Image (tube, rainbow, N blue to C red; front, top):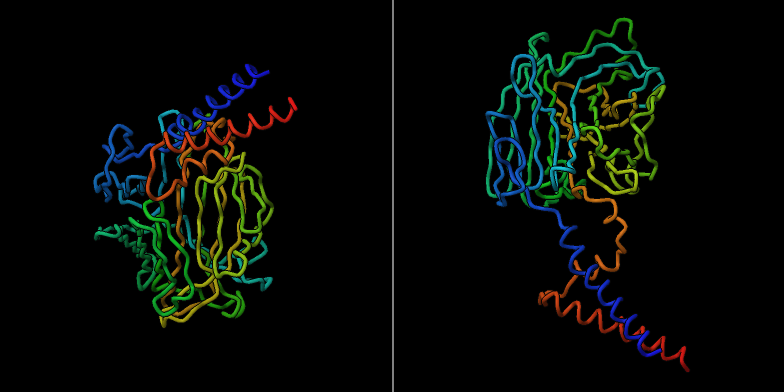
Amino acid sequence: MFRRAKLFAILFTMVLLFLVVIVPSLYAPSVATLSSGEYDNSQTNTLSGFNQSQGVLSSNKIMLSLLTSDNGSFLPSGIFSFTQDQAKKIQFGVHYSQLIEFNDTNQNGMFDLTDTPINTTSLEEFNWSYHIMSNSGEVVLYQIGINLKFMPPLVIIFWQNLYLATKIVAISERYPEINFTVLGEVTVKTLVLISNYKWAPEDGYGNYSSRMLALNIALRSEAMPGNEKHLFQLANGSKIDSTNIMVDTSPVPSVLGKNECLITLVTLNNVTHGEMRWFNMAITESESLAPLNSSFMTNGTAFNLYLSVPHFNDTILLDPSFSMHNPPHDNVQEFIPSLFLVLYSYRPSAEPSHLIVIGVAASALITVIAYCLKRKRI
């Protein structure tokens, strides 16, 4: 019996060593950086910036590759990506596609297919230019789009903010209480300013009290065949499969008790790989708050999001942000008991060596096993 107890204790100690030392080292995401417009896992540094020739905004954790329009300028839309190794990488598109002016026929304050469409303006119809600004805490890509079909010209400005440290960001300095936390190095926080929008004449479309403008954002996976399928999880916990086709839009639920909406990008086994957040308010030219209502619709290939605001004079400011985090890893590692991850991740601040952690854990485990076996002998 004593030999069996010793053998049992040795086996458990070996398993513990494997789970505490080997597995977490495999689980830890490799740090990647930009090299010739792509991530190269062989290098590690903290460079962040904008590659002007390739239209790549990057930190050492994510990369946003901007899309090009027909005239060769960079659109504010782009493909986010991160990778842990060449076999497992995620590429996800955030496409700011169009402005939709509509009459809110059913008076529900959001865009749906029962509303009367008036004008649709694609963001590809704009001429885009950009400027880059940076400091020690962030990199800002400043993009200006001008549409000469409107008179005066319609102007849209995108500020793509890549913070290098986690930061609490408010909707405006005037409203510091309306805020959420932006994760550093993995989030591109976008401010969208729409200026000089010329509303269509009222004739035939009812009163301006029903007139609204929606910014359409298409979210879709850009993954190569064989990569993980993703679902969209709303703040109320429901999960949406973008490969399904909806017959009309549905409202996006707000985060409970907060002035914001949240959509998370999750795998089939509930691992979060990204998220999109935005406030339920917009800022007008006079810096007053305007309601922003959100709806969504899947068409079989993408999750189409519509951020709708009521009629405004001259200028409106919206603020969606997108994050990519939790790099992909092997499915078997996703089922590792959380006990061992906690044991590895939350060590005391004195940073004892792995051997001390292993020794304490192994001693405790062996003591418990020996005690149980002794009780059985008694």
